[in-house]
Every structure is written in C-alpha cells, then in structure tokens.
Length: 136
Image (cartoon, rainbow, N blue to C red; front, side, top):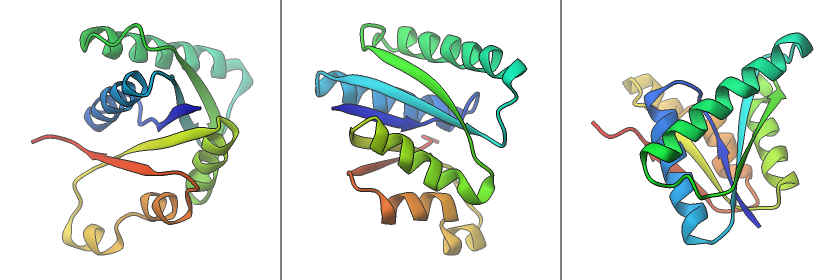
C-alpha cells in the first residue's frame, strides 16, 4: 500500500500537504506517491517539469527530516473538469491506502461551493481522504 498526495506545486498549501503526506507514509511504513495534474503534458517539457517537482519534494522532505520516506513524482494530464478523476485514478492505480489533498481558504461563495475538485475527491474516493489546510 502507499500514501498518495495530490500535489499543488510551489504553493504554501502544497508544502503543508506534502509534509503531512510524508508523515503519514512514515507512520504507516510505506511509500509516498505524489501526483501533479497539469492541463496537458507537452512531452518536451514534461521531464523538466517532473524533475523540478522532484527537487521541490526532496527539499521539503529534507527540511522536515523525512528524507528517508521512499517517494516518487508523477505528472498526469487533465483539464479543470477532469482533475478530480485524474487524481482518483492515480490513487487507485497506486493502490493508495490514504489520499492527502490540500485546501485553500475560500471566500464565502467558495465555502458554499467547497470546490468542485475537492468535493468530488472526498465524495468519490475509495480510500480515506485527509484534507490539509494551510496554517495561518
């Protein structure tokens, strides 16, 4: 089994969610599978983008003393309507026992809507979902 993370690259909530996912992987003595969904994967840019994400993951894990947690980063293509389904398919393929996602603070209207991606993931996931919010 594994812990899956739907990663928001280069954002404060992305780093907070990454730390939480790595802690969960360490507690469960398993690996961490990180997915970052992009609108489309340009084959020429995909490897450079994945390498940049891998550098970010390695730095965050080292900064919080979790560099020993085994991990991998994958990119997947999915438009705005398809992000949730892409994340859920990745978590299923990774045989994730837990899925970690980050959530940003929202306006009153945003709170009412919750965020369609977050809501779809929470409602449709076949595994437990941990929603991490940014500390203020």
